Amino acid sequence: MSYVLREAEIPILPLGHAPIRILHFSDLHLTPARKSEIADIKSFAQYKPDLVISTGDFLAHMDAVPVTLDALEPLLDTPGLFVFGSNDYYAPKPKNPLKYLLPDHGERIHGQDLPWPELDLALQARGWKNLNHHRTTISINGTTIEARGTDDAHLEFDDYSLVAGPPADCDISIGVTHAPYLRILKGMSDDRLDAIFAGHTHGGQVRLPWFGGSRALTTNCDLPHWRARGLTQFGNEPYLHVSAGMGTSPFARIRVASPPEVSLVTLTPKN
Image (cartoon, rainbow, N blue to C red; front, side):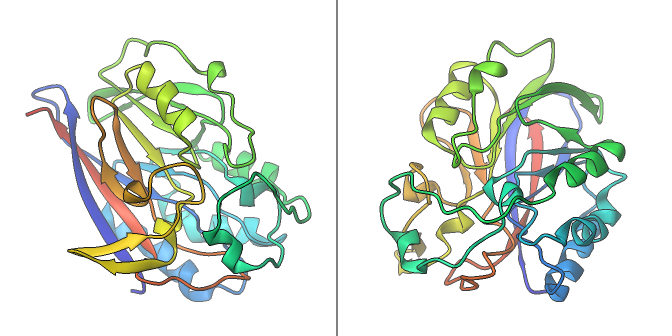
């Protein structure tokens, strides 16, 4: 196994409700050549989740849709929620990797359009819910969950107003987005969601040794560096769980002190 299993617990369920095991993954950046990563993804089913959440960037190649569906096959009979990221829409292009560590001025270099509609249709045909500017309600282990999501904020495709508003009749409410820009977190916080799931950051991708662990040099968005991966909460905002993801761009296949990861997040009753 060439990835790390990150485990976390979020106490947001009503008292007496059964725990819910959520498998959260992100940023697969799959190409047909990534045989070991494909095998790792197939192994995710061993964690026996009740719900799967993907926070985008499945693709990194024109021929990656069948590869992605093959890798995810062991999970596709489990209820799933997903959004897309920038790399699902456009193929990666070579660029100076050092720019990743510099301030983001909004400049984007797009490759050719990727066949994300094929992936979208195939995932929905297996029952997974596309949350790009959609809201849905699902029942897991007797708990009614309202889930909402946005399209990719890194490309400024997001419009939270399309899903904004108080949660519907539910036990808990969650938000799903690819890039955890502060404007998205604020909208979901203002609507008093219980938890938010995101990806995009790669955990910083390059981290430096720091007191008690390591520290991200960037999040590739306006999220503070200390929230680059894992479970955090700030003030009265919803819990935020950021996946450091499994892959990288094919042109920057370096991760330092931020290994590939998948997360098992267990929702438990409130204390």
